Length: 266
Image (tube, rainbow, N blue to C red; front, side, top):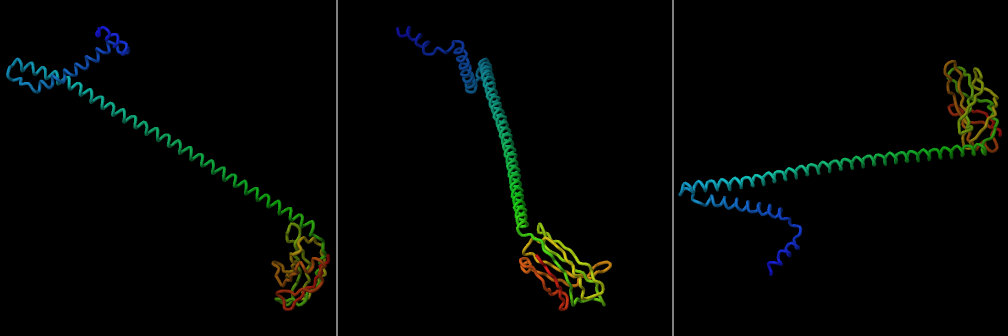
């Protein structure tokens, strides 16, 4: 009764086992065991006692050895194939890793270059904007100063005395420099007086002065055919004439006690 119920029980517990599959597996196992037994028996048996037995033993040993060699060769080829596959897989992984590393490095380099370029562009734009603001502020300040501080004055160059001459006589004239609009230095000059060290010019100019602190300069030159020669100079500070004007003599530098007589009238 126990045997009758055991077969259905086994079938219900192992439904996935197929009969042809079981037979093939069993045959392979039996062949392996037989090969090992024949090989061992051929090595241990004394095949030289009986010629007929010796022939049988040699055949059995040969059969077992061949089967063992075939199996070992199959195992060797399998191992070699696995090693080759592992080597190829490793090479492929390294290649992929290098490619990914190169791609990442290239991407990072491009990103860094782009960020640097953007940073330099922004810095340059900021500098330009600051420079433009400074220029605008300076121009505005100059315009306001010009409107509030510029005024017309009359400058009269009367005469000079005690000029030094390198030869017997000189032909002196005066060049006047003053500060005009946009903080620029402007000039005018008198006519020259021939052959004298005590000239009288009585030259008057009306000009627009735009800087309360800038001095007014008077330079005397000797008129020549090629190059005029410097003789002497004097300077009048802005605080001395800006508010109430000036009318007096100025000491000449480069002349022995020479004087220049001028008037600045607002």
